[in-house]
Image (cartoon, rainbow, N blue to C red; front, side, top):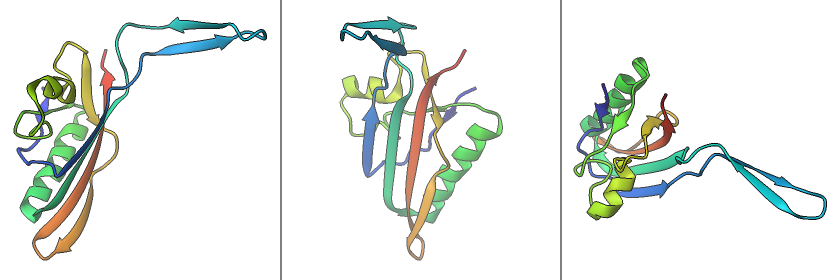
Length: 132
């Protein structure tokens, strides 16, 4: 069962749609052949930054990380979490809901930096993978 990311609005967001799995072969004369291994993208990346959020909100993100990774699950985003502020057409990519088959997993543990007593900044990185 997917785990919903907390409804915390990111301060910054970076997204890469990934790539198609393929291998390029180049002959000695420079001719190139490409062998594609599928019709779906892999390894999409999403980075979310949360600046000056409460320590309680930072703890919600850490709890989400634990909930997802303790059972090898995946994260879902809504219009109120990682995709907030984006147009509906862009949200479909950020949420990977357009039939891509990709599922968001944490690429690494979140990084929490204390800014001021009671305030923190958190950086999260996700990688979307095809889960067979």
